[in-house]
Length: 234
Image (tube, rainbow, N blue to C red):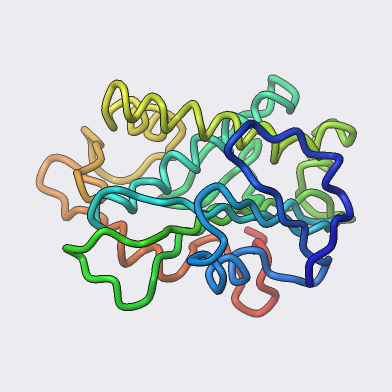
């Protein structure tokens, strides 16, 4: 299931270890199965033309509700990676909590997984952060078809890795507020005012609106088509 094809195309910063998977593999599910053995910083990448698909193993140091906030660091890294390589007039935005939009069109999103059976008051042994973006699609919305420089799509994984490191450094040095602010700045309108992220990652809407729970939302990615196991259209 593992191949070395494509490894030379990625320029990853120190701390990452690349594992290239065959075209029909599922990076996220594979990483979930081997995360305990693979260790933090292992990045699994599927070599496909139509999708940019990869998953990264993380090693959290906080209890599960707080650790889930790694999703937002991942979302920011995806947004920054696309923005750094796409035409400046094509904005990147987010749909709560995990969907990525390019110039208003859904192109994919981020998944987060943790060990089955991990209790809410326990520190997970690992997390898996999975990313899937529609790279190309004939007649459909995609990065290439929506004005993205085709020659610049491969560096997204490398750019993501660097932006994620920067995001975690900011989180460590300045607290989670820096990560939250960057995420909320790209979040599409949600009913209610005064949006903020709680310590467990829930989206708090004021005044008086019920919070949107992060943990439950991650069980079923909002952007993933269950039949094709690829980003849905719409």
